[in-house]
Image (cartoon, rainbow over the protein chains, first blue to last red):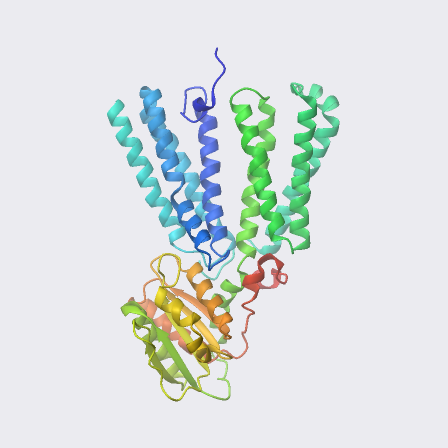
Length: 133
Length: 315
């Protein structure tokens, strides 16, 4: 059996789908937490503001890219990968919800941007599944 | 949701210290005792023992850094460093495990690092800007406290149609407590201020403009020409927003502080045109009029983790 390459890890391959899902889930929830943490850092800084806006949506194109890559490499798994992506997006949403446990003044946008990003990622994955399927 | 903290600061600190301490101890034991423990546990010996010991000691050091940050309460940058270090440790270790170049046993320290990262983020989120949400919570505690002596005049500065509704609500609350209220809209033209300027309170009402105050509001707050409007007065911030208001509130409050004002309240209103929001705004006006005892130190926001212990406020 050939040694797996890094790209196999990010393509939701049959042998590495669990690891890829876990990695993406940790990445997505960390993005949400970092975004919330930065909300009150350097409040007059445009750079931090830009970083927050990037982090608001970053997991979405990453998950979308993984779905497209996996659909291209493993067409028969394209539909199942949509389910895995949903798990990742749920972790992202959980990451955005977690700060509500420790702060009462969280913004509604903390979770709303996640829902928007989830729609974009899943729509991209759906199109990819339809194209290869 | 607004007025409830589900996990207190004390509890969160204990959890963070416990997790960091356990990680620290685990990594030290692993680095020193792996020749004895790994065969007993059936774990494959590391391919490169020196790299393994260095990596374990690196993770141990990260734990120590986190412990210092958590226990000394004066080291926000150390906590950020611990988070970054955990990411640098966990990501490559995870990838090495996933591609089969490391024993699956090493997933366990990775999982521990992910737990640490999440807990440290929550600690950071809670500790940073504690004054901001104290300002939001405490302002209503002033209701039914007798009004302060001295001037009972207030200046409401606001912008946009949505902001006008907020101005009306707060103005109504202040008037109920006997305040004379001057309302000045912030537009493209220079401010037209009344001649009599002995205000006891200045309220700035602004919409959120994608995580910042609109440029017009920024200009007013920064202009030296308007410095005397804010200098030495109590000030409040009200941000009308459809979702994100925390950062805009913080930015305006910081500008007010720099202009010499004493920020006594900050509040976000999701939709100032709703009847419920109007009621809340009016209550806010009443409580602003009665702001006798609650004067949280806004500058705590700037100090972040270096601020005074937060347990009392969070408990």
